[in-house]
Length: 417
Image (cartoon, rainbow, N blue to C red; front, side, top):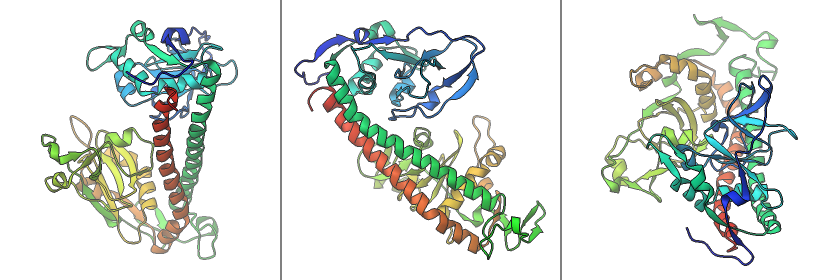
């Protein structure tokens, strides 16, 4: 670990600038906000929600301005770290034992600065070096880790550094909030039109509420002009493929053809996906069963686990863990996306397998669906197009902001900038 020494900065041990796992008391039986590891998103400063539960004892305890930092190897490599901001004044929250709580020493360490220190490459590098235990379950050796040394600027300079980086994270958070509100609107619109059948009639009034006509399709009443069919009537269902990993020329770290795995979606909350952790070369593509999917294809993970869904932001490929749907003409990506979202439980119940549950392409093609008339599908696409494009642009902007922040981080946190 090497970085530039800045004037006025002092080398200090971690134990001198933080309080690790501070003692807090919570009465058993009281209702508390609980934050598990799944509420910490990779590369995001703020916590993504919480659960209110009855406290039964144990767990990590924290207050606002504390930093939650993972102490197991899998979460460390996924960059799950967050600053607590979800509690009321003097409220204590509780969470997983899989992360440690870092609290800033008053007037010695600024809480925001401590968060940015915790996400620097060298902080994570030293945490990884302090791991011990079996390869499957490695935890940080705290006494060893707390002896790690870091260059720390004076308190006021810490605040200045944190303020500049916080401006980026606040913008990311605002974008996320807008995306979530748009998603709520889109989900509600889909349910209103295609579950409750209150889509606009010819007079732009809710169809069902205004005595719209229905017919029995054998499984229930559906609007006149609508039919029942299979998922394959709405789009072409295709599998993915994996080039041989024994041939290094099949993969490339830069450029190449985007190649998505279910793990990419498990580590990302993005609705639109452009690239995953790996790309394949043309040679890898030609030697595998991977299919080049057009922009707007809907990716659906068919195993390990079933039900991750995303929309292709550009041309890409997937591994065999997906059954992707290329929408037919007149069937928009948004309609297919929300249809699959609403059908995920039913699809999961159709799955089979002894080692892990999987839904085959043949079974997915036979999934029974209601097919609206073309006018309603076209209108839904028109109504949702602007909202989904706005979501896509906000997600793209956030990826750029994260890249900018991560580029600036080591520069400002080392005093070089």
